[in-house]
Length: 284
Length: 306
Image (tube, rainbow over the protein chains, first blue to last red):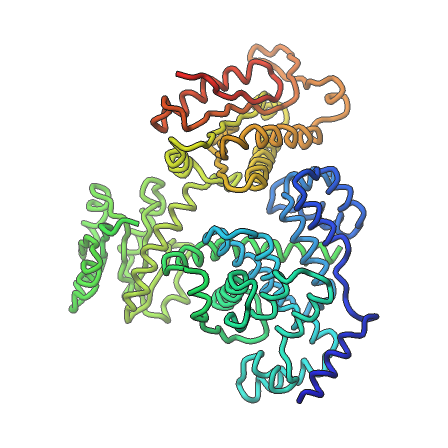
């Protein structure tokens, strides 16, 4: 069993085929964290990437925003807001390595990002953006398994079907590892900070997180809520229970949960539009 | 959410169990059951309930007509109507013709019913209050937000666009709407960047944002700079060079109108004279007159001590 795990990690470790996080995302992140940076600096950075520029302009001129003639990147940045640009850059670069066939997983990830944002704001947690990013990345391991080991991925799907297993259990049985571990490994190899890799690693086992317990609990909850809402498709239909540790660590009431679910319902409609826009941009 | 909600049940005949009423009453709701279709509208018009539950297990035209007339009247369309029907009926229900807000299926799951009642009320309140053009919260939310800031070190900031009306007249309302959407985005992005805050749309070219007082000038400055940058795309080279566009006044005379800008009135809410929502608006109106005098983008802070 462990041999399989080693084999998978060796395949993924092959750096020549390891997808890298484009520099533009990290630089955008750094720039937006610096309060002194200006829209012009950010616009210059975005303009250095033609594909991202095209996406930004296409998005800002899309009917959902109702602007008819925005022609400069800096004005697009002003109107869309830095956060939209950041998530556009991150989601489009990460999902560049995904095929169209797993658009459901992409939507699941976007939805989890949105849910985590709502939860973090509702509970007035610090570092809302980081929490959303961690949620956006939480299933990145599935992408890598599918891209790098397509045969194993297909066997996992078959095993799920045959034994009626959840994806996580099928992965563990067949591969001796799971998408959470693979994702953690990948995120670490991108040198992203612990506050991102730990929630990715522990989103199915909140109790195991040690340093970033609250962030991990939010990502776990976001994953469950998006699955329960039926938005996107993460690989299987099972909606896991919200783990008691998550409730406890977030100090959340049932009233909070109702309010979160309610806001999520609205925001997922917007997210669906966003997803369709991005897919449309890919077709130009 | 209040617990003394007033709920009207509209049913063909009293369902034998009377269970629904009891369960709703046990939640603290006031319940009235209406069975004769002819009396329903009279009752609702004279004493509108908060929520209407309608038994559609054997839908009849009179009942369906009630839904339609309620939803056609903007005054009553904010009352959520929840249909109760057997599950198979839901799939084939004509939602366009009879615009229900939600439904539950028989046999009733009361916990679900309670949740749907509360949810439908909140959803309608939210949807009705948001400005359809900018999707920003509208006047009810604005009033609530302002009331919460009275006495705190916050600032309520009123924003409007200089020369918007003339722009709208010359370039058409579709482009005018675009300008309003732009200002809405610019404002809410600037508020978001500042951390905690609120952005709302009063209507037309009148907007409001609320931020901590010590950030108000920075946010106002950013809104002005960003609006100026974006608006420059809306005029042609010649207009930009001249600094004005041509319009006609009421008498048909050509006039030179300066390019659009924003005027912002910043009202601190911890001053002793601000004890009430209406007072905030009054002070803002005075300031805005001041801010608009220059015809250029600017903000004015109320620093008067009383």
